[in-house]
Image (cartoon, rainbow, N blue to C red; front, side, top):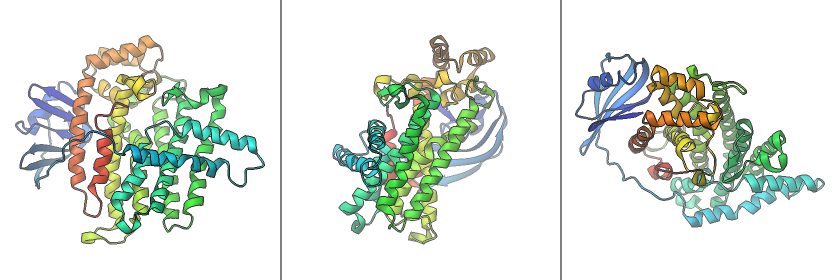
Amino acid sequence: MIIRTGKHCHLVTPHTVYLNKNLSTQTNLNSLAVKFPITIKYSLHHSTLSDSGVTRISCCGIWQSGRLPACQHSTVASVNLPPAKTGHAASQDEKREFLSLFPDIVRDLAEVGTYSDIPDAQKWYAKVLQYNAVGGKMNRGLAVSLSFKLLASPDLITPENIQRAHILGWCIELLQSFFLVSDDIIDGSKMRRGKPSWYRNDNLGLSAFNDAILLEAGVYKLLLKHFQDAPYYLDMLELFHEMTLKTALGQALDLLSCPAGQRPNLSKFSMERYNAIVKYKTAYYSFYLPIALSMYMAGIRNTDNVRVAGITDKELHRQARTILVEMGQFFQVQDDYLDCFGDSSVTGKIGTDIGEGKCTWLSVVALQRASPSQRRLMEEHYGRPEQESVDKVKDLYMELGLPATYRAYEDSTSSMIRIHIQQISRGLNHNVFFKFLDKIHKRSS
């Protein structure tokens, strides 16, 4: 989180602290003791930005109010930060090209071959696909072809391979739809992408879980049909299974913070737990999965094959995964903020995190800052769906200055991610990561 005091800006998370270069590390951490009378376990670094470069102080240990272990100082070479960009990662033509393949996806899954003896089920499958797989921003799906074009050698960038990248993109969109249909049932969400959640159509209710299974099964049908002869076919199968498991584990951890039919357990609302939920539930499949698939298509498999300066393909995957997970955590903090303070006509969904008692960035920061009386308000009203309770929690967020904290967090985190991207080894085109970051920075939906 970030606290502004006069001219200075202090950013505090369980992972990083960024301090104004004119202030000492000791002074800044001590000044936080008033607002954060807690013990913080951390692995952090302190960066001061100037025209000449970046100075980093790396620390690890436990900080208690008024005490700070010694830090090791190191100077990092000059880093030229690219300017923050606005706009879209994909052009309208690229979106149209991606969408134009969707009828073929539906035919592959619902109209071809072995299901002709069950026409009613075929038609239903097509309806499930058409309602749930389209209508979103498609960032995950589009990211595969966009990244492939930046990572692959020119001889691999053929119309056939671009189409295959689009098919992989639709596999991710189907996986995403599987998660969303399931999540809406679990959470009781009323809206999704500006229309009623699927389970609310025709009084489907819990039977919509079967449709979620259909969406996930479509992923593996498409992979078999279009990639069974590819040298990276097994790599992709394993990756999709791994990402599905990680996401389900993240969902389980999220649900354990607020068991069904019970009030949330606020004692479990720590930044450490929140980051774990986000890492597993969102970051892996939303950010690492599309880039990893494009790397496979570009011939960068998760092996010990050596490339430039002795860097292996496995190391390139590790570096990509690290920065993309960091980006995914940034994305989820934005999502938490938009759930509470976003415009539902823009986001396409009605915020439910407070009423459902979700472990969110806002709730964790609020509990860190809350006085005893403010914590009692959280314990009384957080996790209650009544509008009066939701409004009281939102009012508390405003009282604690969370909107301003979020805006400062967004700017600082975006800048730090840009620095990390610049530090990635040769062999990975940095523009792959900048395009992803540009898409999510300052987003409103």
